[in-house]
Length: 114
Image (cartoon, rainbow, N blue to C red; front, side, top):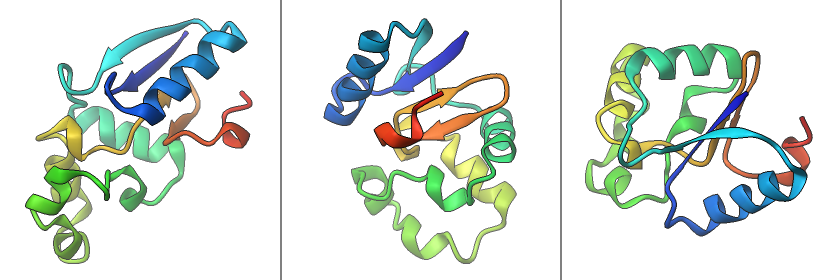
């Protein structure tokens, strides 16, 4: 079973949830604000996804802007950036879909045909 990690008030997350429900995909629901991803989870998901770490940041979010993360991304180490992501679920790009051998970041229907 996959895990669907999102912020329920996010319109993109709502679209993704509807897509999963319409396709009959079974998933474990996880509210990213209530259950923030840990540094260990993020490191594992980063490796599994094959994506650059920058893709895991919610660059349009208020927390990202308030912490001025844009300037930190190029100066902090990968370990430091993962630790930063783990401090607040609102820093993490969402929704996330985590399976045994894949991780999807953000919602693009064309990428979600799993």
